[in-house]
Length: 397
Image 1 (cartoon, rainbow, N blue to C red):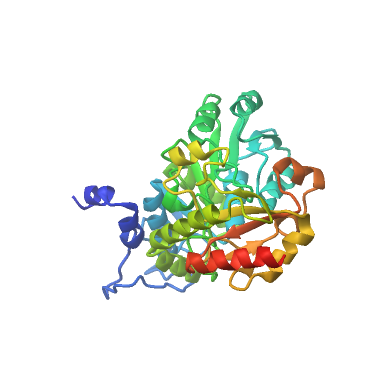
Image 2 (cartoon, rainbow, N blue to C red; image 1 turned 90 degrees about the vertical axis):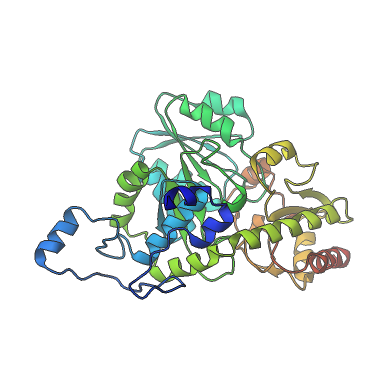
């Protein structure tokens, strides 16, 4: 009865209550088990646990921890996944999801529009160990079809790309990948676990940087891989527990508490992002405002089908290139310059010189990352104040 009731809960309710484990003290707030190891009643009990640990039995914090398990169960319930493994950072999640399942000689197809560190794993790390990677224009379904091969083991993409907000049709790309038996891995950070439903739309594996919206307050690093029980327990877990990419219990506790408000925060941020994008579209000093919630976005219709809300990030292209973009950034008063996103504080960054600086000029041009492009992550401040701050900076620049 209780399990059936939980399945009917909304995301907002699951984000508050799912996965809770209470000690004998019956605490209301989740307990933080800040411990590396665990004690056994006997040598025989230790032997038995190392052979096969039960669902509430733990061996070592690198393998699992009660606080970390609560976060994993809660985010899995929120995402609609069978299981999850929490990692030390978002990039540990991306690396773990890919490297744990791939071998020399395997083939991967990936969208070209990726965060710089994701691109590094695909271009430099995987190929170093004999994995072949083919990059495609993620918005072109024919390109996905043409790139698939009988030995294609995985497909990787950002559902909403960093920083140009290019959208991937998850349902269509997943169907193409599944025709050759490939595993679909979706980095769903910009779509957020509140607005996106990548698993429901066909993805097999979803990864998040929990550092972003899940924490949402600039405190802790973290990541998570979500998928089937078989994939998480038999593929991901053995790799990560032996290579050491697990999340710390303290960070897991922070993430647990943050999940209680993630729905409220993301909805407020998305509403502000929509208002800001509408207010700035056509403004003097800007050549482009890129936001999936605008009718001018080339995939606006897809965004309406695929996302509950169009997200918390806007890309702004300043007329006059890098020098003008820097003047705008330096003139802002409320909005801070930093390379994080999904935070309660509004943040701007200049991708050409920060997050995507390792790319060549040609690669950035191909992806639409121009010298004048600014990525704006909208926070929880009053949107009217943010609009005034941005318009004032544009006027000064």
